[in-house]
Length: 145
Image 1: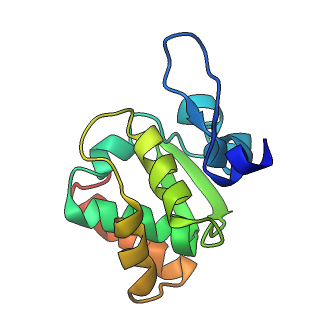
Image 2 (image 1 turned 60 degrees about the horizontal axis):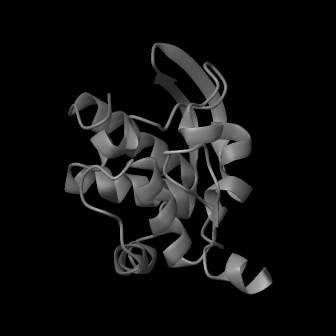
């Protein structure tokens, strides 16, 4: 069991649904809920959004920055303001971060890879506030809706 957890094991999900990566179940699901449905006004919905944001190179870069650096600042998702902080998950292995983002993309679009995460990890470090500023810029550009 411990070995399976270290290799990014999955947690069974409802029949016919995509298996939930262990990294999502143990690190993300408590706030963002099953299948990334979120809690309106508290924790943003990820389901149905990650695959859209991930369609552009800028969006993919930002998604990776959120997981590697965290994010701070007020945001609006589905018309609901959210004031909170997203913690950094840089402590997770590249494979786990790629697996979580691919899971949240619901099999649509290009899968995230460990190499892509490693490249982002090796790039410039952003503060959580900088990640929030980039989100605002991408919203104005229509990359994030």
